[in-house]
Image 1 (tube, one colour):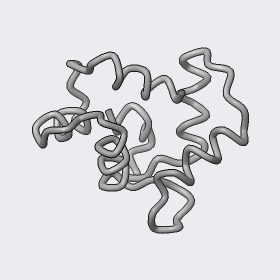
Image 2 (cartoon, rainbow, N blue to C red):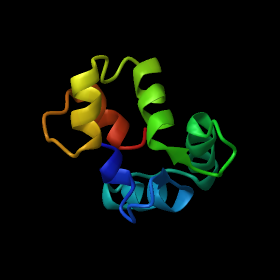
Image 3 (spheres, rainbow, N blue to C red):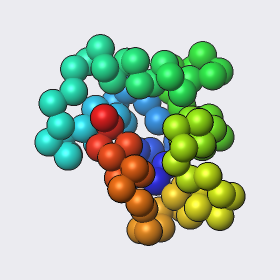
Length: 91
């Protein structure tokens, strides 16, 4: 799932990555909401979310609770549940 956002493959989900996903999904998300999403997962003050922090955030939200599903989500496997799909829609 991380790869859905990290299309430039730099290991960090940025504002631009989130904005692209929101546009691709046709979501009406404000700039303020996108900034807030990045801040939620930015534990290193890098203006982005590292993969480890993304996984922690997903776990805190009750998504990808087991290790295999966390790894599968990051590796782009397609067996996502409804909660994961909703998160992918950046809501």
